[in-house]
Amino acid sequence: MAEQFRFDVTADDEVLLYWPDEPVVVLKGDQARAFLKRIEGLDDRAAQIELAKIAAEELRGESGEQ
Image 1 (cartoon, rainbow, N blue to C red):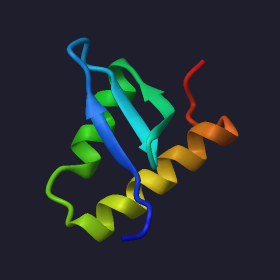
Image 2 (image 1 turned 45 degrees about the vertical axis):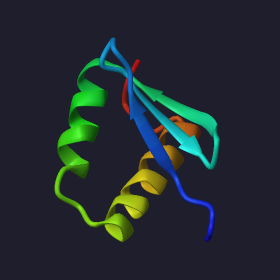
Image 3 (image 1 turned 180 degrees about the horizontal axis):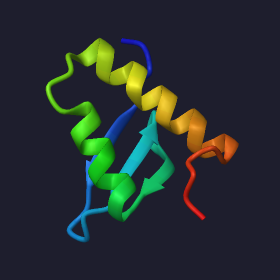
């Protein structure tokens, strides 16, 4: 099986994005809520694409959060 992104939601409602087993992005507050809404109901392939986009945006510093 190919490596895939995955995510976990913490007790503090933070979202941790992993690739494949290393945390690469932490989303908090409004970003975490927007992510969960954005990914809701997506099939696995579409979810992987969204996770990749979000990770790339965060790693490039394009998240918009100050």
